[in-house]
Image (tube, rainbow, N blue to C red; front, side, top):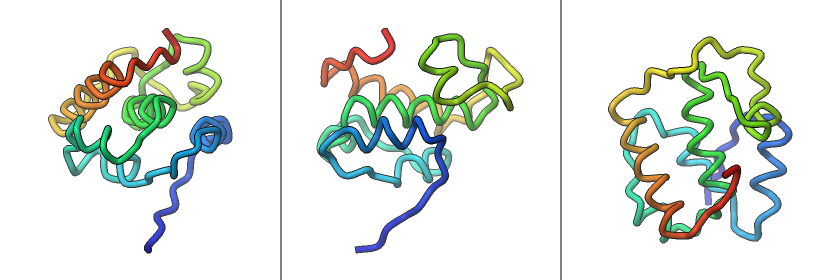
Length: 111
């Protein structure tokens, strides 16, 4: 089995490791180039915390300045430049599919 390694803030790693599921790096490393369906995310066993991290990492990668306490703690806003991140078509589809998976799973993180 191949492992993908990515760099995440320490808080992000804690959010993902705190769940019993394996951390799936594919959505983090490929969110700009590959569309992940909500069914794929659900069937691969992503936890609510992992989905939250994946969705917000997409925004962080596009310069989004987080307003929520949790978002600021995880992503720190030191390199942000906008409150309206310009996402690619693929990233927008991934955000929509992640939100759909979060609704299906009843996720309530940072609400």
